[in-house]
Structures are given as C-alpha cells and as structure tokens.
Length: 192
Image (cartoon, rainbow, N blue to C red; front, top):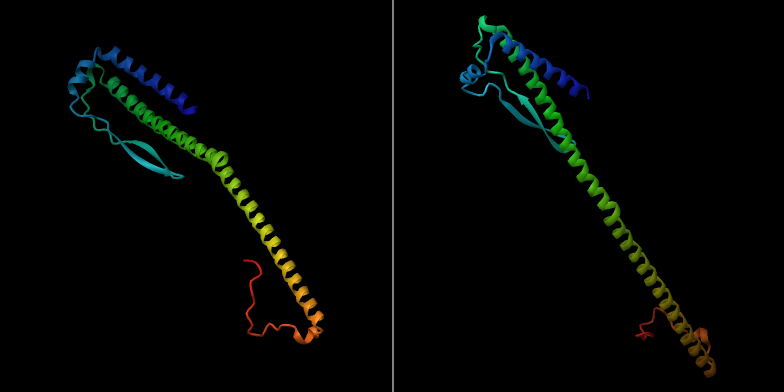
C-alpha cells in the first residue's frame, strides 16, 4: 500500500515537472522524438528461487542518455523532468517486479492447495479403504486358518481315540504300542 501511494506521489511529481518544462521550453515533443536513436533504458530479468518457485525479478540497466538540453529555453526544467521520469520508471519496475512475484506465488499456492485437496479428499481415503480391506481379508484368513487347525486337531484326536479303542479291544498296552515320533513309519494325510 505504501509503495502504491509513493508511486502515485512520484507520478504526480514527474507530471508536474513535465508541465514546468513544457511551460518554460514550449512544445518539446518533436525535439525529443528526433533525438532518440536507441533505447535509453533497458530492463533485465533474472529469476530468484523462493521455496522451489522461480520468481522473475526485473532490474533496470544503467541509463544511457545524451544531455541535449542546455541552459537556455528551459534546459534545467527538461533535465529535471527527465530525472523525475527516470526515478518514476525505476519505481514502476520495482512495483512490476513485486506484482509479478505476487502473481507467480499466488499461482504456486493455488496449485499446491489443489494437490493438498486431491491428497486429502481422494488419494488418502482410497489408501485407507485399501488398508481396511486388506486388514479384513487378513482377519478372515486368520479365522479360516484357526478353524482349519481346530478341525485337524479334532480329526487327529478322533483317530487317536479310535486307535486307542482298537488297541484296548485287542488287549494291548497302549503305552507299549504308542507310535513314536522318531519311527520311520509313513504318516497318512488326514485332510487332502
């Protein structure tokens, strides 16, 4: 805001000095146009990197002007008007550089906000749903495995009881005839 007010004040000042020069020297527009061969002012652009965003920064190169105004016919007023407009141009380039930086940063912020919203509203919920699905499937597999193990234990227990009853029916001592885990006998699969 202060730069804007300062720019307005400088613009008024430059226009006032131009009016003074015109009053003193008369119409100077034709002589100014005739005296210009090359651009007296050139701007250069460079880029600053702020938080990963390339911001353009404008800088004025040195003024290259020929002083054609003498002392007579309002030369001093013309020189003052030129200096006032050169100062105004420097200020306008600074303001343009700041405004361009603000617009560039604003666009970068908007893009970042869109990415954040996409992550919060789309990607993260999808990942959370996938995680919940995987957890439920793992729980289901764990329950199935537990049920299968219980079933196998039940069948093994029943087979062991049947063998024990057969041995008791034959009158054989169960401790003497109990199968050993170290025996090389082939164990049939219970569940296929």
